[in-house]
Image (tube, rainbow, N blue to C red; front, side, top):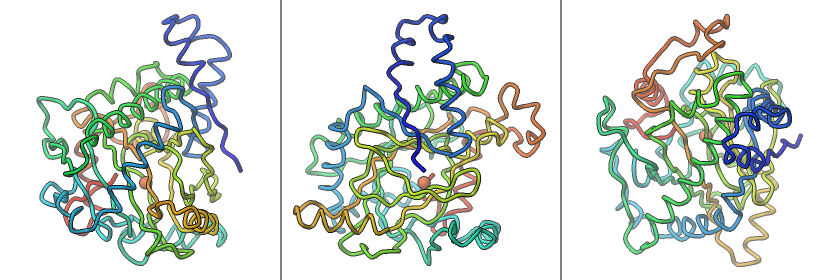
Length: 360
Ligand SMILES: [Fe+2]
């Protein structure tokens, strides 16, 4: 199954004209309905954003490949375990996939038809990650530790500019999708984006060493959902992402060149009282990954699989609760109001074995 690609240009042009009559036109209404429907049915969405080109994604991945190729001793200088890995580097072997520790989830996995079962990880994820906060932070918040200062590695003069520029582009794309989804769900256009202001958005690119771990079946990110609002990434140079649709079907995601992939997190599930659930996913070395590894080796390219991921969050001090008509849904009681910062802390305490690592 190929996911549809939504071109954001039409919505952006109408939005720039700031005309409500244009935003209310039938074609845009249908496009917004397609966005909310796809998020609901698949937990994912492919978009094309004219503000974010394939070249932007390439520049970002080039820099991250160079960073992840550095020796471990160098990268560990950017490790901040006392800040719960919320900023700087998280080495491989630290992040723990939920499917490894959540018994309720393990039971559900065993009940799945065999062909849709995820690869069961045997230990922590074997991938590195770099955490970089993007966007303004609140001056007054109850959740200080989720809002720590950034870490910049030596020898990368372009680091701050590259991280911020990619991060802001990703947030802009998410904001546009969040507006379109809100309209599609029958909510005010700013229902989600007003809650995202000053949120602890995290750029969290990962680096997986395919030279060492490039064997078919190797799990880079075990079956899990993201605890944030929406997650976005550019196209990776190595395939391997599997997602699970609402109907339980497992699908290998193919991101076309120049497109971005968005995935639903637990916070959008809360805000829609489960109408849109958090998308389950995993990253595993598949036969397509093996093909890409062979191709990259032949061309002498980097064998680090980089994901250019940004986790968009609801602001820590905002309250997660069923919005608008979703408050009347029979499932609303399963999603009691909770401060987003408190929700994140609760979720993190489940998935980590070594103090609060910052993985959404
Ligand atoms: Fe994830």
